[in-house]
Amino acid sequence: METVSTNTAHGGVQGVYRHASKETGTEMTFSVFVPPHADGAKLPVVWYLSGLTCTHANVTEKGEYRRICAELGLIFVAPDTSPRGEGVPDDAEGAYDFGLGAGFYVDATQAPFAKNYRMWSYVTEELPALVAAEFPAVMARQSILGHSMGGHGALTIGLTHPDRYKAVSAFAPIVAPGQVPWGHKALPLYLGDDRAAWRKHDAVALIEDGARVKDLLVDQGEADNFLAEQLKPELLEKACADAGIALTLRRQPGYDHSYYFISSFMEDHLRWHAERLG
Image (cartoon, rainbow, N blue to C red; front, top):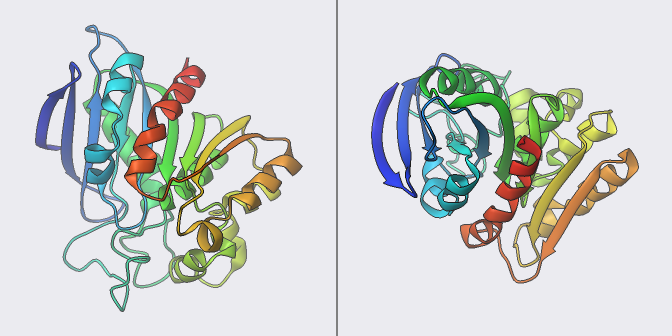
C-alpha cells in the first residue's frame, strides 16, 4: 500500500492511499480517516460508497464527516467507484452512467468488463482485508452507507451480508435498478440479460426474495432531479413494509442530489451507525 497523502484533522489522520488490486487488475485509490484514539484501541469501521462519476475524493473533500467520526470514534473508509487506468473499458459513447466512475458495485460477467469490473468483491473482500492488515485500530465491527449508486451498493451489500454490517443507510439510493433507466443500461452490460442475476443487485428485489435486516435509514431530497425517474424510494418503502423491515425514510424538502444534501445529514447517519455498532 502506498501513501498518497496524510493530513491531521480533528485530532485524527485523514489519509489517501493507493494499491494494486488483484480483483480489478488496476491500481485503486481510497481514503481512510482514523480518529484520535488510545494506543491499542480497536475502532469500528464505516464504509462509504460513492455515486456515479465520483471517486474517493468527493466525500473526502465535501462529506463533512471527520468531526463527528472523531467524536464517536469511527474509522471512515471511502473507496473509488470503478477500476481506472489504461486499457480499462469504458462506455462506448463516454456517457457518465456506465463504465469509468460507474461500476455499480457488481462483479461483471460480460466481456469486455468482466476482467476489471469486480467492484463487489473489491469492496466486500479485498479492500476490507487490506484495511484490516494496514490499520491496527480496525476491529471486526462494520457498517455501510452510500449515496445514489453507492446507496444502491450499500443497500444490496448490507442486505446480502446482514451479519457483517451492523448498520445500513443511504442518501438518495437507487433502490430498484431493475426498474429504472440507470439499471436497465448498466445491469445487462455488466451481468447479461438474465434478470435473475440482476435481482441479486437490486435492493427491492432482494427484500422481495427474502433478504432481511432489522432496520434501514434513508434520506431523500425532495428537490432531487433524479427522484421520480431513477430513485423511486416509494418502491423500497413498500418492500420494507411488506417484509416487516423498519425503514426510516426521511423526505427532505428543498434538498437536491448534491453533497450540500449529503453533508447536511451526514452527522445523523453516523450517529445512527454508532448506536448500532456499539
